[in-house]
Length: 157
Image 1 (cartoon, helix red, strand yellow):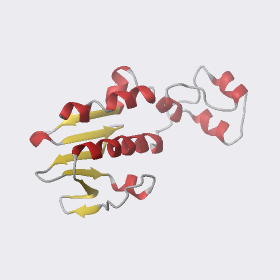
Image 2 (spheres, one colour; image 1 turned 135 degrees about the vertical axis):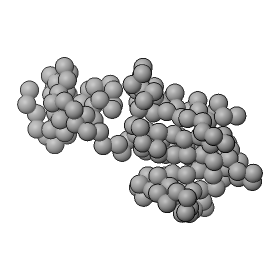
Image 3 (tube, helix red, strand yellow; image 1 turned 30 degrees about the vertical axis):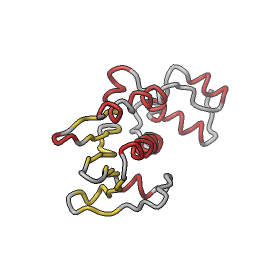
Image 4 (cartoon, one colour; image 1 turned 180 degrees about the horizontal axis):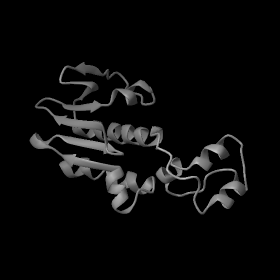
């Protein structure tokens, strides 16, 4: 059962080109005491699952919920005193929650603001010609200063 909840991170790592050891640190799932599962995106807790007797509880970082990018249907998040920054959403079945976990993890990846670490990579000429970042590693691409310039119409090469 827990395997299907932890196995969902690998397809996301591949989709966003988070491979090797770096990929494991950028996106991972951990089984905690009591069988709870936590999902970290860029070493920050984003989503957590708590298996209750009558429901499966999904806790999601407030910042992700505030984006209103994921349609929760009739579900409505509620605050928990034990985790004020992670509102809870209860699901009747575990199968229902899998789709939401993937959606929230993708949202966390897409909205992540990576600290800028380098001016540009070896692909700067190709990026300039195509007027977009061509780095296949989407996370490394977010760390490039030149990408910001290209997106703002400033082309140097």
